Amino acid sequence: MSTLVKKLKGNIHFREGMNSCMNCGVCTAICPAAEFYNYDPRRLVDAVQREDEETLRDLLRSEQIWYCGECMSCKTRCPRGNTPGLVVMALRQIAQEEGCFTESEKGRQQYALKKVIDHNILERGYCITPDLVKPEMHPEQGPVWEWVYAHLDEVYERMHANLKQAGPGALRQIDNDSMQELHRIFEETGGMEYMERIEHCSVQKAKELGTTPEEYFISVYTDNNGQHGN
Picture (tube, one colour):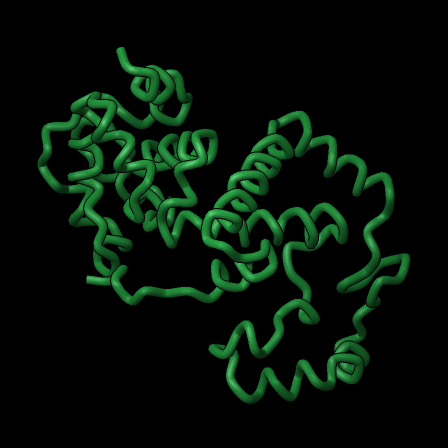
């Protein structure tokens, strides 16, 4: 048994999500991601069943495993009790462990996600706050957001936000005990280790591309080759 196959079979998500696929295609028919992306969970599960090292390596380097929204619609329909969404979870985890995620545009976005978790959640206790949604990074927000962003203090006051202050209220400062508990959760579950791995592999990829980590982050956050949709 190859190293990747052994690692995949040892993953709890794979063991819970993969029984025996008869290639009926019901998962693809119900999958919301398949409607919009070049994504076919039926083919992905079929490829995994082959237990071929080269095929698995190609999957880990591909865009395919990053299209799934993990909505688990597939779980509700499969006549064999498979859950391709869980198989995707396993593949993503191994892609992070192996560093293969840096080989695809969507996979490289793990670096942006790591930065969001590392800075926003672990330092501030929030996934996102309005001051982080910069108009130049989020043009989809439109001109109204440009005004909001330029007048955040006024908006906070009107919304009665308790910005970075102790006590109750929106955007309040998270107390030290809660922050320490949050850090312990990430440490005990292995989240910190995974984030360090993502950081290391992403910095190496930036060097390979001849760019700085900061420039790499911007490209990861904004690049779109336009080849992901149907």
